[in-house]
Image (cartoon, rainbow, N blue to C red):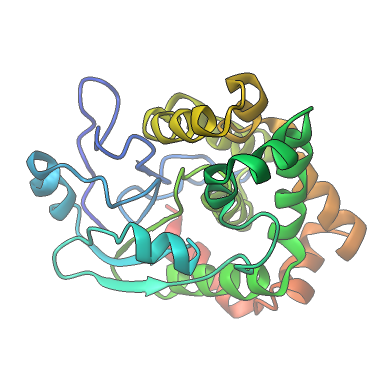
Length: 265
């Protein structure tokens, strides 16, 4: 098992990456517990402060899975833990509407057309549909699950804000482990209190584009209805979560069994 991290007085493992957190500790419907210290989820990892590197390097993480687009990875390269393998695992088509929205916000004319008049909320629902049906997402999330199942050491996966692409990855893993839907949603919503870094750059981009914060805010927080959009879309396309796993992600029963054996006490 990986090292269990101490949480700082402010409730964060890493204050410089506020959405960095252990996926462990959740109870399953059968009464088992997701092990601590094996899988971490996070926001962007280019932000790790020098004084927090000893904590970061001491978690035993030997695999970093970056869910961001090529532009995000190239613009803000990760700080990887010492000795960790870095893996770029795409879960979005770089040309899709949901990818690289920060680039759209950086263009004032495009931002005003895309995100004014309530369009941001519609945009987010579209992203959550893409995350469960697009080819890149299906391939990428299968890769993530297989990496977690294989181990043998601790892993961190992340995107930029650690709430949407990472949020679905966490919901998928917890669902496969048998954690009930209410707990999955609670873990997902916990990202809302951990968006200080995201708010900083999103406010700057919004101001540059002449957008009111209220117009952009739906993209800076998670909402239960966003996650529900993914689950509803799974039911529409695949019929059930189990069918999504088998027919969409094409995960074998052996991989799911190995995941549970590794991750559950």
